[in-house]
Length: 193
View 1 (cartoon, helix red, strand yellow):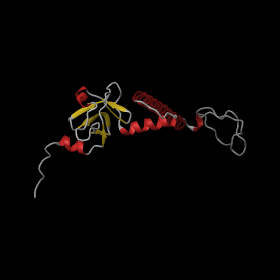
View 2 (view 1 turned 60 degrees about the horizontal axis):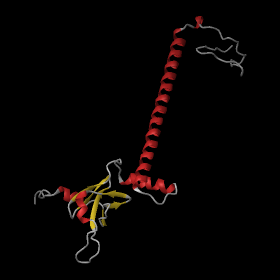
View 3 (view 1 turned 180 degrees about the horizontal axis):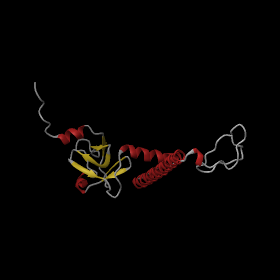
View 4 (view 1 turned 120 degrees about the horizontal axis):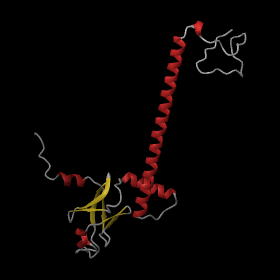
């Protein structure tokens, strides 16, 4: 009983719970979901053969779905990165990009197209967000202005004694209502006949 022994290799534990895929190392590196990962340290594994079967050697690679910038090859114990000129991306964003490309009828996609589309979608989201913020600011300014004007109108009406208030510009009809074509100007108090 008592506490469990501390984990000796927390990174190994983390890697054990990440999604994985078996791949071969090609001259360009490793490709997973159209994203290519390469590092010179894996060059000696390019087209490596399995000594038992004579086939290309397969490696189990893992990646964190929250950040697709890199993969881990546990056998040579290497952390392999993708092209750093592309922005950071997670698996859900990658799926969104691929769905967008499919909706446009593009079945054959490459890494550059994926990241170009990702950047385009990010620009659209940012512009929409900025436009929404601007619209909220305009609406808030309008509401504030209207409240201010209503408060000023209430103060003017309350501060002016009834004897000093200006009569309506046109007399109201006998039922105390204005005719359809009559207009009320700002701060005008209209009293029924």
